[in-house]
Image: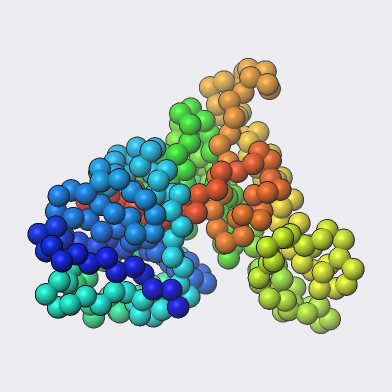
Length: 311
């Protein structure tokens, strides 16, 4: 079990509160922690954040969002594992806790909220809704949009080069490939099964194919499997690469057709910024073109933007 850092200071005059940002997904939850002190400074315990960046995040300044999105979140299997990992300070040094949660898993969200209600230091958690994210939505039924997709798009809109569109790939339990246009609007995207989900589905819905573990080795599988297990892993991994690449190509065409420079020749069009996060992102990114920029904390950066914008 991973334990979140405990950096309590003996100087009580410098202590204010501890911020937790939580991305509560279908199979795990990811957390970044920020400790804010009375001097106005802050220290990101899962990465590197300067003292002025808390306010800058709320303004969606690219440098601040970049440092946050570069930080690797801590992953937990369940709310219970997260709560068990929290530091237990001396009673006279308890820091108030502020929790901001984006969830696509209602049962796990209820479990986490019940557990937080038993923590005396925890303020009433902020459970984000779609309208908490400061990004225009040009889609049907915004209320049905997964908040993980929305959070990643919010951060991507802040990180993209000015005037560029962006494509955001999140390789989680499901793989999402979403588009932000050149004006910074979220325009929707695509959802497909992850390599792990493909393997589970084939094992569950066929008579003779085995159910393989959802863990991939440090290197991609061979494209030509010499046995059933190798063939399954090849199809799951390389099929995912091919599907994502096709979506990058097609979404880029559409984004460029919406661009003010759409009338230019092909070689004059501004590039699309491709961004990548999620569990098997590193392996996938090696085989995609253009090569995506890897942002481990992209979803958490979007959650932090929403939290800072509300404060």
